[in-house]
Length: 374
Image 1 (cartoon, rainbow, N blue to C red):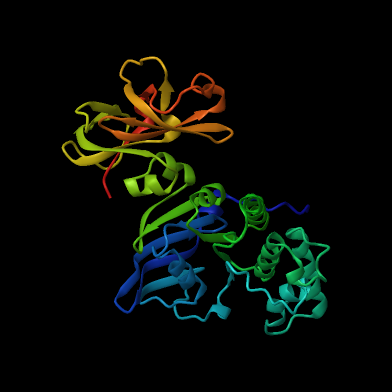
Image 2: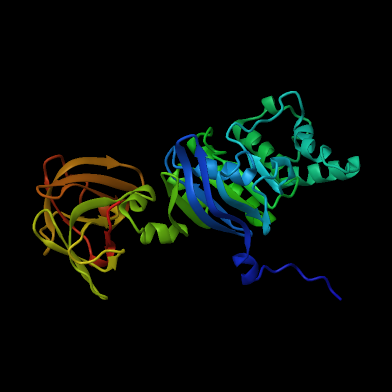
């Protein structure tokens, strides 16, 4: 019978490969992670996103085995590994510093983990696996080099190769691109995605960089003060954040505080500081009469020199040319600062606007989201 290519079925995608079950981690009186529940899917690229001190790195270190939960369980492949040493887990980690051995060649760095396995692997098998993984990370001609002779991006790929050569079930990435410049970081994001899809290994990334999380992840776990605020795909979090905190952390937005005037299936409204009620087609978990805020993304804001029915008259505060689009910062008497992004194609009619000029601001109801406060 002919050998068939492996086809990943939906059941494979949805299967859980790891789980944090009611996990809490305390450092003295400090609660770094509080009752975290998270199921990690086989073959997905998951990111922990949040500010410094939110617990994302602690969660990653508990998966790796470098920290032991104060309560709850860490499961990998349905096995409770909460008390298992790191070297006994089917997990590898890529650190921000890369942690490469400077006295070793690239090949020796990558082979190191394989050489520690017991029973020992035959040397030809080790070298074969090293050479194959070097090709995977596009460093096939660099095996004999010392790591200090390489660029930051090349060192990052060596660290990645050393982690994946052991074929772990989970590959943990602790802000591995933070030390790279912007252009190289973008290139490495593409490479990480390509390698993850090629190998099918579950990647778990810790980052405070929202752009990095949005571009790399199948799902993002947004954290705050040791707790998960929302988990979803990048598009879900961007289009349907559940709180102002998520909307502010995943992308940028304009926020206007007010009180919910009505909530209905088709269209709802919120009364803002100018006394006007603004329609919204998208509503999070709020009820009429509650304090809430209206969120509108800058790219959804429209600017016009001419008066627009239902629009807001505002004064231009600043105009910043950013290449593919131009950022306008305007001020409304009651709503305050409003930021808008105008694509280059539509900016021609606005390009002569200067500070203090009047401009009309408007948006459609389906671009607005009523959010509960944090």
